[in-house]
Length: 120
Image 1 (cartoon, rainbow, N blue to C red):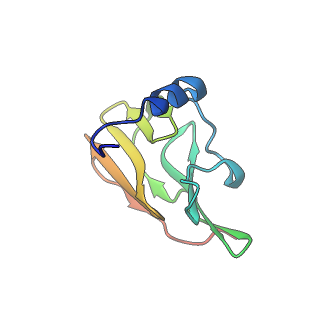
Image 2 (cartoon, helix red, strand yellow):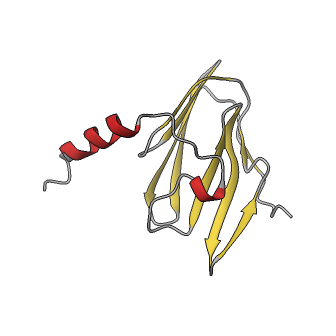
Image 3 (cartoon, rainbow, N blue to C red):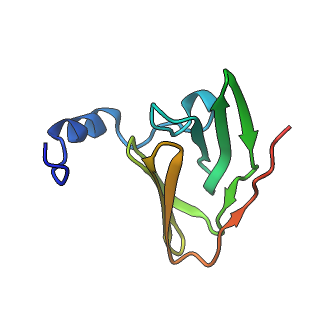
């Protein structure tokens, strides 16, 4: 398949699952199936609430929040390919692009704060 063409099955999967998935816990975190990390999101807070590290049959948690973004969420779309927070002013999109690697795209956001501390 041409890498520039999207599989027709992706659209069907998105339509079936919708864009209101629960990525709030370690067991349900946003993560590709081959990744050792997962991103935890909260409905009332923009950004990443928790970074889950799934390694050697253990899960460690970082942050609270892990990535803090100022503003209030007006709408959140939590789909299988990415998470988008539409804020009062601007928006933020999160997506994985490789194993254990994700990208954050911000528009109209004044800053982001990363708290890379392990939660106890």
